[in-house]
Image 1: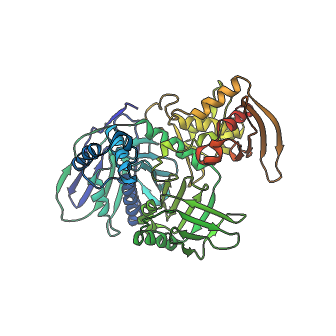
Image 2 (image 1 turned 135 degrees about the vertical axis):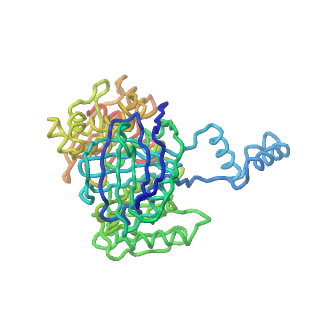
Image 3 (image 1 turned 60 degrees about the vertical axis):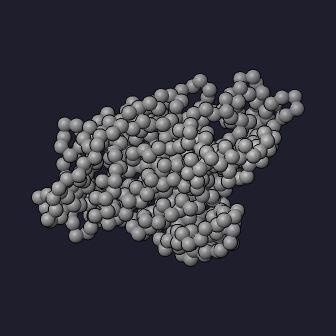
Amino acid sequence: MKLALTYGTPSGVETGGGKARVRLAGARERDVVRWRGAVKDPLAVREALLALHDVVGADFRWRPRESRAEFRRWLAAFLDRHAASERATLDADRRRALEWRFTEARGEAWIVLDPVVSVHPDQVIFEAFSRDGAAYGRVGLDRSATTETGPVQLGTTNVDFSSGLYEAVRRLRTIWKTELAVGSDPEAAGEGLEVATSREGEGGATTHREKQVELPDAWVRGFVQLGAAAMLEAVKVELRPVHAHDICRHLRLHRAKASPRALRWELTPGQPAEVVFEPWEARLVLHGSKHGATEPRVIRTWGRDRWRLVERAVALARTVEVHLLGRGLPYFVVARGAGVDFTLGLSGWTKADWSSSARFDALVARRRPGVAPSPRPAAWLEQHRRGTPAEVAAGAGTSLADANAALVDAATRGLAIYDLVNGVWRWRPLVPGGVPAGLGMGDDPAETAARGLVARGAATITGTKREGEGGTRVSGRVVEDATHTWEPSVLLSDEGRVTAADCQCFPWKQSGLKGGPCAHQRAVLLLNA
């Protein structure tokens, strides 16, 4: 998305008069945002913001060891030695090197994007993606945990998370009075985000140049899929902070050189959760943990090295929650402290960033082809800034399923996001005026194929059944061609979410929910909308 955000006031660090003030400029194109408050627990805020900084700069993608020049010399020599028929037999490391160089040359690598800062009725929230787009960080500061001063203007802005802010935040101490200020009003002094700490005997100032950023389409799609994934039903595992520390410590001291490399969660009702580190089969029993599994379950997650991003936040946590969506699906780690929380959202595996993950939006809301969602839920949310799905539906006068569909549609336009930590939807425009229609979703071949099946009458609903444990199972029949007939089925919760599904086609057998509903299941969902 070709949108440049300018930071008119440069970021900088100002010292003198017994105080040190760090100023972080907000985007001048955004609406006016104002908030200022003295922090009661500076160390918790410090560790949370530093953890977010670790996420912003993280990049866990594989990279070749050799330099660019060395790689070019190797490639030229390789092609000279091998005939054309033998060029397809590249070893795995060289093939990955070729893929990485090709991606880099096309400019597809994620760039460092500045965090989004929002002032809500209950929290001040910082959000950001990692460099590789596979990790999402969120810091929520309770406004009740601060002593507020001055007027408050709710809203959202982008801020420059520079090295100057990082160095200033590192200096926060409990013996100093610490103040945070968020503002993007070009007429007001102290524009942007400020961190002020009282300290004697310092002087001087450091400033940073003005800059512009362009928001790629993948950044918008990442936020859309993240919000949809947060709405899916998950198994919640409640850990003690020492459990998260033990997991991070084991990953820091051991590095697997062969597959499998999954982090395996074994959950048995009435028993503490257990974590198994593959391939060593090292088992860690998390005594004192709790989980919501109603039957024995084994859930494998990949990209486990990214767990280290939560290590700094463990120091501020009183409890740690892990929300597991399923095998190979994204998961969330939430560290809750006193007045501040840190959330780490990880995609199913490192190579799959949030923008290229499964279409989770298709699992949480649907609407009839050509029928626009009701504008009332989004209008209610814009006015009240936050609300649970039930509150939005009641306030807007719509059904819960229609409210979910409208809210997800607002998220596709970059206007709203689902807050997993507090279980509410929040009005949070990514860019002024929202993004163009359809940009947040990207191309979806399965959805296009499903609409084609419905248009030519190849899909029908064969029955609906109310399940004893709640939800409705919808079964259908899809005649794709003369030799392929499928019988897909989906289980819908009362809120309209897809909680289970089945089909006999190859894409579903290969990926399951990791790839989102297949075209045949989506055709049934479209007919049932």
